[in-house]
Image 1: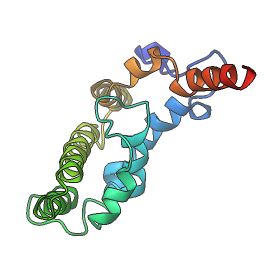
Image 2: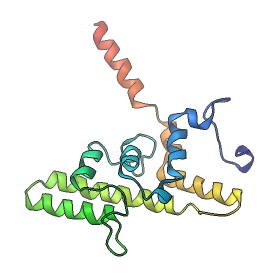
Image 3: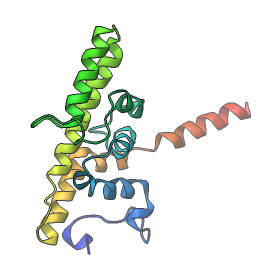
Amino acid sequence: SLEELGIPARIRRGEPLAATGAGRVALELLPLAEQGFPAGAVARLLSGRYLPEVSAGEGIGALLALAAVRDDLLGAEGRRGAYEVRLSRLAERLDRQGSSAKAEAARRLQESASKLMEAVRAIPGQGRAAELLAGWWRCLTALGLQGALLRPEPRAWARRRTSRRTRS
């Protein structure tokens, strides 16, 4: 089992990994490189709470659409992937238009996407089970999943605060 290898595989006793938000995020990372880092999956991962080391905030999907990013393959140039090429061009275009805040958001998104892709690509494509799991665990650690699990979920705090206001 994963626990025998030192990798916690369940959040709560008896609950399957895929049944938790954090587990779904962890599992969603595995096929990303093979799929070419599709923009929808990257946007979900970068806007969620479970990968704080690459979190890019709100409006990620809109910026990716504005830059016409579909994945890291379509629009790539040489060694530069499509995220780098298209988001850097978008940032330059937004700077020329005087939208420096949006241009900076595009640059942050490019940096976050690059960190995500670097961490995921470090997971070996083949090897012994222990090596594959260790690579996956290093990826999750680099992206900050464990730290995110220690923080309370923001929505729970917001619900408590909202319910207090409505009672008053």
